[in-house]
Every structure is written in C-alpha cells, then in structure tokens.
Length: 306
Ligand SMILES: [Fe+2]
Ligand SMILES: [Fe+2]
Image (cartoon, rainbow, N blue to C red; front, side):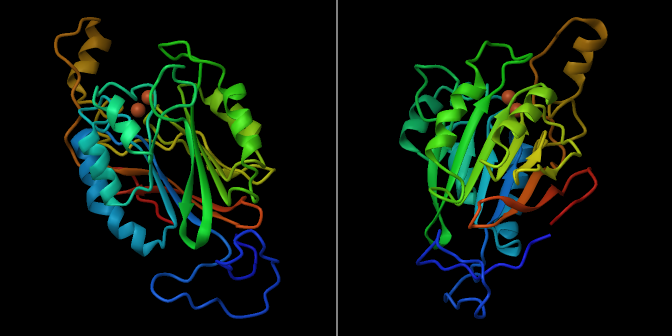
C-alpha cells in the first residue's frame, strides 16, 4: 500500500521532504499531483484487434486512472509483425507517451525512418550496433518530473543472437539514478525465458521503478514489488485476441503443430482484444514502486483494474 508522503512540489521535483505539513497543492486544471506517479505499461499490441482496443480504452483509462505516463509495446501492431509509422501515430494519439518495440522492431520497413523522426519510439538497446533510433530515453512527465524508459532484448531461446542485455543496460541505469535524475525508471525486458526476465528484475532491483517482460504474449501472475523496491512482472501479456495462438488466428499455427506442415501465412486473430499489462504507483523521492496491479480490460480474460 502507498505510504503517507508529502504532496508533490512541482517546483522542486526531487526535493520533497516526505513530511506532511499542508493539504495537497492546488495546481489548476487536471488531477492534483501527489508525491508519486501513476504509470501504465501495456504489453505487445497485436494487429487490428489490439489497435482497436487501445484506441477504444486508453483515452478513457488515462483520465479515469489519472495516469502520469503510459508505455505501450507496439512490436506486433501492424499485421502482427512490427509497427508502421501510421500505427505508431495512432497509439501515440490514443494516449501512449512512449512506444517500445522488440525483436520485430523493423519488420515494417518504414520504421527505419519513422524511429528517427519520432523520439517517443524506443527500440531495444542491444538490437544491433547499426540500428536506427535509440534504446532508451529520458522523458518529461507532469510536474517537471522525468521518466527513463529502456528496452532490452534477452538472449535465451531468441531467434537471433543479441548482445548481453545486462552489460547493455548497466551504464544507462548508472547514468540515471532512480530518485535523482529520474523520478521513475521503466525497463521493458523483451525475451522468451522467464528465468532471464527474473534475473533482469533482480539485476535492476532498487534501480528501476518497474521491470516488465514482453514478447511471450501471455500474462504471468507474479506481479510483485521486489525487496529493493522495483515493481516486477515476468510478462505483461499482449493486447490482442486471446482466442488465438499468442494473438495469431489459431488455424495456421495449429496446422503447423499438428501436421508439421504449413499452408498459409500467419494472420492476427480478429476477435475482441484484452488490454493486458501492469499499473504501478511510484514514490517520487525514491522512484520505487509502492503499489503494483495487473491490468486486463475487455475481451475474454478475467477483468482486472487498479
Ligand atoms: Fe517479440
Ligand atoms: Fe510480441
């Protein structure tokens, strides 16, 4: 649960004392800022079904849940493979502050240019030395606060050999101390293996507000605040149709599993999508997580809200 803390002072974002001496500051229009941030992370948006769910729900959730910062993983947004510039705009217009990608980062060729023009899109920091775009960015958040977002790829069971994620992320964490330069740090750990994701969670514990896994498209049930204060979830799950095989229309994947022979291309399943991810509340003074909730909105999964 959230500890009692001082109201957030927008003129002194990292100097709050923690002593409650006055009622919350009146800051005019919009929600009153408290002593922490309300962050939402949504997992891999899968095709049209996922896009539609983000467009339908996110503008309302941003308002209702008084969100300060929203990260959406868009690596499967365009026909299940990559993210086009047009679809990136759509997710940003729906209320995302930052889009992360993954191993499918550049499946849509126009992302090579789009990521250079749109700094709110982040690709994995260890994708390739020559890849366009950046693997992390320090974003502005309400009240003069700063949110660092980093995406990193794991190595275990991935189709391509990527560089060591731990040594890739270390200098970025060091350069942006939590509760100092950044009031929140969000790490998107994109990989297959639950073990590698958990190791990354502990590696960042105390240095990130949230370490959340993406890529497997199935939400795990282990949301927790680690001992050092980092919110952690092994996989956010996808924003897609769960009557599918990880978001793809189930006929072709089933044919390949059952007969060993493919016949058609994969295409995203078209049924109503479940928005899936994690909600985190942070403390501005430390940047650590004080509350963490799994999110499932719409579609066929059991619903969960903060
Ligand atoms: Fe992926
Ligand atoms: Fe994915």
